[in-house]
Length: 208
Ligand code: VGL
Ligand code: ZN
Figure 1 (cartoon, protein in one colour):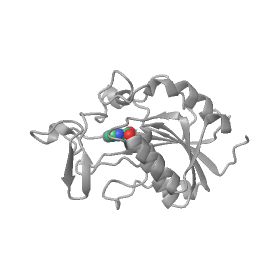
Figure 2 (tube, rainbow, N blue to C red):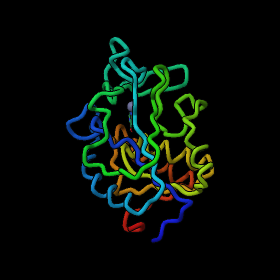
Figure 3 (cartoon, rainbow, N blue to C red):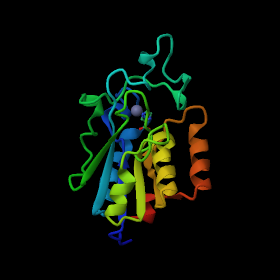
Figure 4 (cartoon, rainbow, N blue to C red):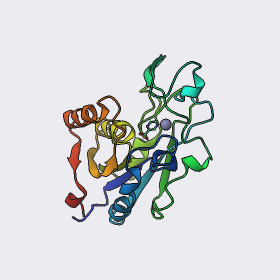
């Protein structure tokens, strides 16, 4: 399928901490890297999202004495799942997987940088108000359609896809180029929410 110049690929959080062996491993997260490289070969416009937390981030269980990873707590902006410390700024765990080959990507958008607010989405932080500027960037570059790949399907990919759709982009998630954490049914619920929002759920064979 020829990919129009109005189309961008968004590669979400393919970072060492989300790969088996990292601090918050997504099962089989490493398996999607060669496929992402192949898909990216067909795109001219590529944006890479990078989870990029300061030390002591509010989403880390270690910041809340007595709490454990995967507990859910209430914060001023709503419920927050607590995670192991991960993707701390300028640490090896925050680096992209070494075999990810996106040398022609133009923009790396870092998120989760605010110590008090998490950001699964590459568009809007968890307070649902603070924007990363990504939709403005895409609009200014004439993009109307985004394809998404990466980690984790049921957290950062889903929230990015829902926000892309809400911002008016035609949005597709390439399912076999994603992997999920699947915490308490989060994968099934993510699939329902994306379908309900009009996000296209496709396979890489639809693109390659
Ligand atoms: C993610 C949990 C915490 C993700 C990021 O990339 O899906 N999940 N931070
Ligand atoms: Zn994170």
